[in-house]
Amino acid sequence: MYILGISAYYHDSAAAIIKDDEILSAVQEERFTRKKHDPSFPSNAVRFCLSNEGIAVDELDAVVFYDKPLLKFERLLETYYAFAPKGFNSFSSAIPVWIKEKLMLKKLILDELSSIGSFDKNKIKLLFPEHHLSHAGSAFFPSPFYESAILTIDGVGEWATASICHGEGNKIKIIKELKFPHSVGLLYTAFTYYLGFKVNSGEYKLMGLAPYGDPQSDRVEKYIDIIKKELVHINDDGSIWLNQDYFDYATGLRMVNENKWRHLEMVQ
Image (tube, rainbow, N blue to C red; front, side, top):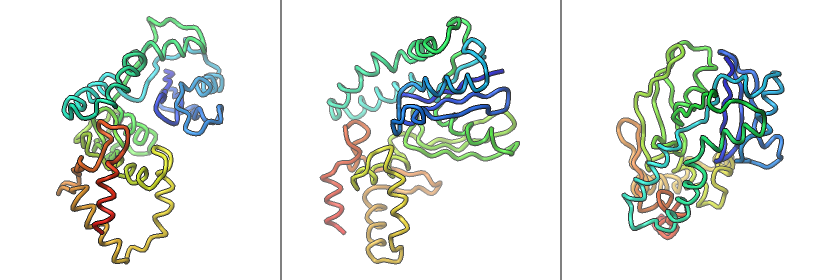
């Protein structure tokens, strides 16, 4: 059984092919286009994976996209509704893109695959697993373990921003999830953004700068106290709650409310 996996339309598009339980080929689109973090459909990556194994599109048993677009659209609508009328500018810019493109993702993917090779659109199986299930699968299934606890943490998938799963054999069960807008990944990205780096690109720079800090400094303790008091509450089970007064990513066009964050600088 040949399965083609596709990640696209956000950042770092890529494609991979597996046969039964073996990864045959995997590559990012940016390696061909030379565009860093290329988000476009990974046509070149798909062609490479197919040609590398000597198969055609119509020989694929399934094509898998990395999340559920309709569930993500549900989160978008419910979030804007919950924060209304705040976020109208973001809503008016996001919804047309969803209606024209992202809600038609199945057709878009099939059309892109048609440009690579001919196949019967009625016979090909197109699957959309949940975002964090895709993350969990990419970690657990290639691992040497038959059974494992799986922790996933990122910005946001559909609703989930982190998950705890149980993997056993060829199955993964989601045990618990942290839901949007509360997110460890988005908190990290908020700091990345506020320090002047690019979202979904500069986070590694922030990580690289961390060793240059002095964890014993009195200023560090002050910042930790302010963050825990104003920005984030850490629950007993390890989950977090983010004070949305300081963030703008849920309905706005920026990661943070910069006026509020400047106030935090003055407090310390």
